[in-house]
Length: 247
Image 1 (cartoon, one colour):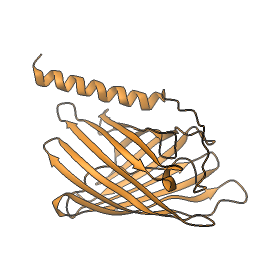
Image 2 (cartoon, rainbow, N blue to C red; image 1 turned 90 degrees about the vertical axis):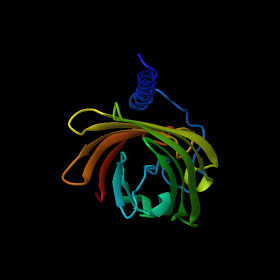
Image 3 (cartoon, helix red, strand yellow; image 1 turned 30 degrees about the horizontal axis):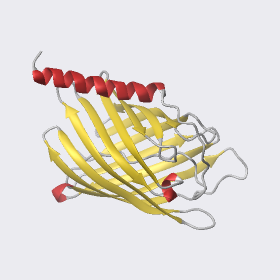
Image 4 (cartoon, helix red, strand yellow; image 1 turned 120 degrees about the vertical axis):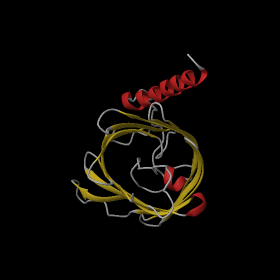
């Protein structure tokens, strides 16, 4: 076995370990803190950290299905020259509820900026997602910053991401630093399995598993589940996603 083959085998094995970790939900972080700052749900969707090519547009719409509510998360990103992306996100916006009285719409409105340094099959990304969370009685400032290392293994068509993040109290319920791991592997006929893990006993920390399938043209469908690290009522949250980007 040559050195390159050995490297790919080790990298793929690590990717599968991270993916299994997310799928099985074996990391159980006991909840010891309650939300004290924003009054929002304990779990939120986080940015899909990836490159948007210059002049391209990437749109993601994911709906989180809780036991008693549905929450919309919409993001649109535009690729600029020299490895920059900018975008706008309207997240954590409850639009349906079975409880009475229902919680108000009150979305988080966040501005996204990313800088990419890319070489063949790998890239480093620095990004931030900052803005206002609309809550009663006072709006809160929210900010999530991250440093990400991404590697694509072409022999296996596997993607591996590792990174670190900082989230302020407005978005995480308390100032938090953590790690991010993600792996995506092909299954069959264009279907891919994605596992995502954000560490931390806060509103950022979670495990997410999604199946992503290409539809017509440049549309993709995602179905999965999220397992929050912070126990705030819903241990399993359904995810239905629809993704579109210019080709």
